[in-house]
Image 1 (cartoon, rainbow, N blue to C red):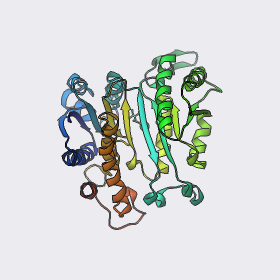
Image 2: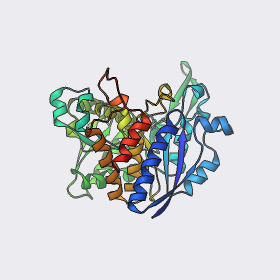
Image 3: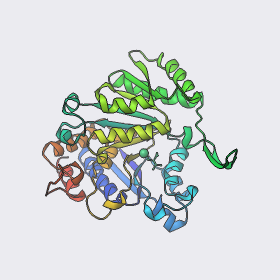
Image 4: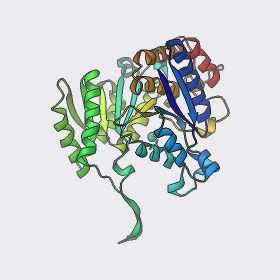
Length: 357
Ligand code: IPM
Ligand code: MG
């Protein structure tokens, strides 16, 4: 296959980790007879510096013309004081909504080689875990009505959580279909004891579940889910939840894998085009130090092969190379036990993974 990939390196460690993923994709393509053409576009802080806006139209058009998008990370202290509508993060939200990417898949699993980095109790670590967070990505409080106004106690600000039946149905379908291919269990996370939008969420998810044989759906309140992820993460297979709850819970899930530097993500819509990015941010403090961990971005590249291009065997090659490198003891600083003297930098870890492809 010949495929066009839009590259958004972004800010901070974005450029280094994206270069690592590109090298891995190129080598995998060369090995398996596929050609990837990469075109770079600006988004985030670097786009603000170059063009005055976080998401230039040229970037949106380029992504819409591509087969898929690989993104590093956006944002940094330099742009933190800008008003909300021209912050770097606005580029991410704009891309998600303009590309129609309503699904966000965030797998989190414990690699046996990294068990020592898991902050949980030994008996919990022993159980292991392998879960898939299905986060709704273009609705809810992120995109609801917001503003400032005069309230009864003076000036106030508001953000609105709203979900339509259609939005809940389509993400529920994704979660059920994913569970059918996994262990058949979906935990739907909401706050139905308080929020009306959660009550609609709950009834809609159950209605859709009836169409999926062999899938069981259990409701869990978000506060309890936050506990359960620490208490017994092995109980989770697929978690389906709203934009905001998914944002928070996926960071929590990343910590119990040992490092946020390990977690990839796929953002998908109706078609095959997706946007793939690590769940971590631009890590301004690591920029230029070589201490960035490229694995989350490399694994995001693997997810692109699997979900957008239907190249599952090729994705396996990349995932296996990461696995083997970890089993062989390759460690970036975030993956090494505290006080380890010699760790691999971003380029060295990439080389180790390349050598195993
Ligand atoms: C994420 C990030 C983004 C989000 C920010 C940067 C807007 O935290 O992808 O999880 O909240 O969705
Ligand atoms: Mg987040």
